[in-house]
Length: 413
Image (cartoon, rainbow, N blue to C red):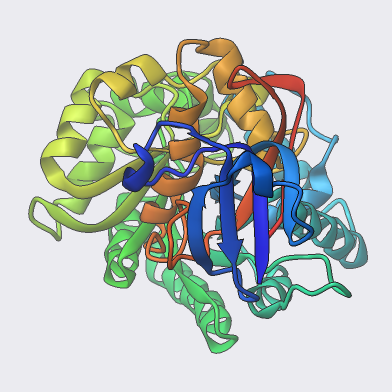
């Protein structure tokens, strides 16, 4: 049993006012990390030898709602500000530029960093099996004095691509074999479609239908103006890139890429479409796209990866519009091909710097509870609640509930 105290806690728990910071929190956890008690401590008891006191704010463990951890070997390699067309060219050129040993070492470093910094769960994209052994290791890992790392849950989305319709069934079968390998290792995994611009209409439809049978979809949505231009008018840098490589392009619809995606779902499902559908990036998310998603999807989630969006596009998602429509916003890091680090505090700091009126408590809801809901694991994580084992994380160097350049996180339980 462990007793942890701090200056404040942001519990994301209705019992304590949900978004209201709890002053002088004392959290008791058992050996498995399950919360046994949350209360305010008395000043007289804080010096007790069995209480571990920290300066800072206690928060639930983070849920990284979008990551590509198998691309960790690409840290510091990509040029910034290239747009989606330039980014795709770099992926095609550099993805295999490091040997297997180097790729595994880079991944292992990031698995450890995420664990130490307080990430308890990750929605992770895979295109191969390389990350599976490490995911299994962290799923079953036991924290102890000898082993300072903590377990991390990964839901794996085996992402499919393919612009040529005649290859659709073969591509789906190949992806399903990768997903089956993960499941055989005890991991939660299923196929998922990548995006509207990397898939033929047929592959998009059959992959989305297969993914929804698992109950979960992770989909790159409206990441760039180039993507929307391709679907709306068949023009722009991304469309020219594909045509230059003699690849088939999606049909021109005159609508946004998210509207096109939902129309593909409606070829095999009726509103409201069941399943947790995680729409990732949302840089060009507009009113009509939001209204179509709300009208046709039972449980949409809108994940933002602000540092990645700045890295590639020098743009940010329209968080004001997303908040106005009361969308369920989640937070992710994307990959080290489009980011300098996989760090949830850095992502929160980016949001705070660009939208200073959004309170830290709200941003933490995106970084913890909403991500847990998107992965269907909010029964055990996402908030500091008695009976859950959400991870207890310390946010340090926070001033007046504002993150600073020195702010960092560490997992305590």
